[in-house]
Structures are given as C-alpha cells and as structure tokens.
Figure 1 (spheres, one colour):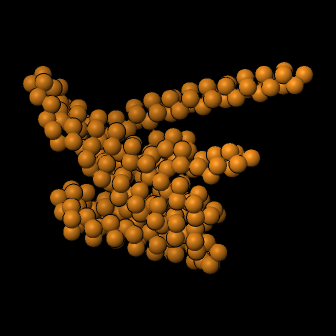
Figure 2 (cartoon, helix red, strand yellow; figure 1 turned 180 degrees about the vertical axis):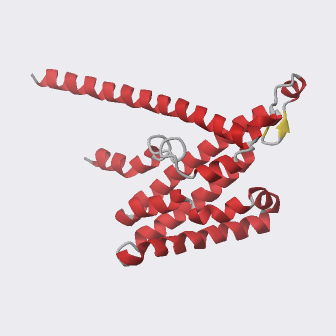
Length: 224
C-alpha cells in the first residue's frame, strides 16, 4: 500500500514531462514557445523562469484553496502569478540583464501564460501542497525541455551554432538556413517535433499497457 501511495504522490512529476507535456501534448503557451525559441539559451531561460513561477504559484494557490472565494478565484490566481512573475523579472533585470533584454516582452507575459492559470485552476486549487508543487515541477520541466529542444534545433539549423557556440563545419558546409529562426521555420519545427513527440509517447504508453496486461494475465493464470 505504501508503494502505491508513494507512486501516486509523485505521479504529477512524471506525467507533467511526458503525458501532460504543455507544449507538445496540451498545446499551451504556443506564443512564447514560437517567439523565444530562436536559440537554445532563450528557450532554457524562459522555461526555467516559467517553472519557478509555476511551482511557487501552485504552492500558494494550494495553501489558500480553502480561503479563496470561488467567484474571485481567477483574479486571485492571476495576482499570485503576477507577484512571482514580477520577482523573476526583477531578479533577471538585476543579475542577468542580457537575458532580460533578450526575452523582452515575453518575460512580462509569463503572468498571462495559460499554462500557469490552467494548472492553478485544474490542479493546485483541488490538491494538497506537495502534489501541487510536484505538478508545477513536472509541467515546468516538460515546458523547459520542449523550449530548449525547439531552440536547439532552430539555432542549429538556422545559425549553425548551439548555445551561442558556432559549429564551424556546419557553417562552412553552408547548412544554416535563416528560415529556421524566422516565424515560418518556428512553425515547421514545432509541428514536426509535436508529431514525433506524440508518436513516441503513444508507443511508450502502448508498451507499458501491454506489459501490465501480460503481468495481470500471468497473475490470473497463477491464481488458477
């Protein structure tokens, strides 16, 4: 019984990365996804900033879920999210000014990112603090992974560099194509990676289901 409870407790951490991946599965936060993934570093930075706000806001919403009147819950959630979003902006503006300028307006728009409001409404407001924090970490890591991967591919194909470091053989071979760091290239890479990710996750789910069915069959056969 303890193992089952432990597994259920940490389930939001794993499902947030794969099954409920905000970018490739739930298709949330598409605007910042396409806008900031012109480089891997931008994607990583936006993902980590969003993860911080998501974890903190989930924790506060969960703690206050029994005290927030239902009629004003959405403004209350936005106020909580805005507080932590402002904290991130102030920290980055002070200590990471280049990254702050690079992310620009989209760092401010974290407060209206539908991922944060969706998790606050559908999960944190209905669950205790620990599962809500784990849900925030899982969804945040999934979002960070997706943005970093898209940024990595677009930067590599568009400029011939990764995290700002040029790969000279690619540049000399003329591989970089500017279209990949333009909006059209962003849509193409996003769509292609969405298909691959969903196919991979579906195959993994089918394999897990098959393994569980086989175990159940053996168990029933053993009981007989």
